[in-house]
Image 1 (cartoon, one colour):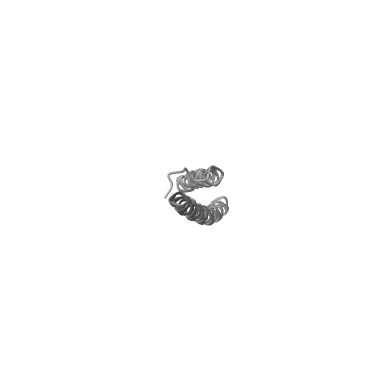
Image 2 (cartoon, rainbow, N blue to C red; image 1 turned 90 degrees about the horizontal axis):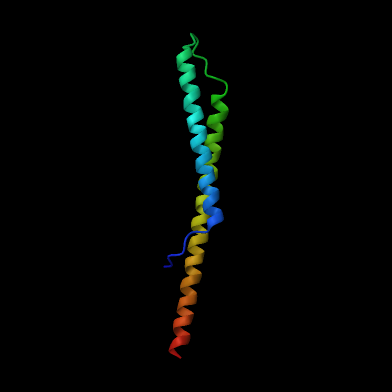
Length: 94
């Protein structure tokens, strides 16, 4: 109900995690391009790719968890604001 901005620290954490994911995705793509340019006969994957992919999966899971926490916090805040508004309305009618 309120047009208040989301909780800044939680929002910043999500933004930082998203930025880290983008960095890792760029690095991952760069490594894949390097591997393809080398055109190794056995097509062995660069050993740095697997850890980066694992980190991307971990960060995505962390971002999802942070978003869920943020949404729950925002819902709770909205419920409290609505309850306060109802109380103020009731008191102003008396």
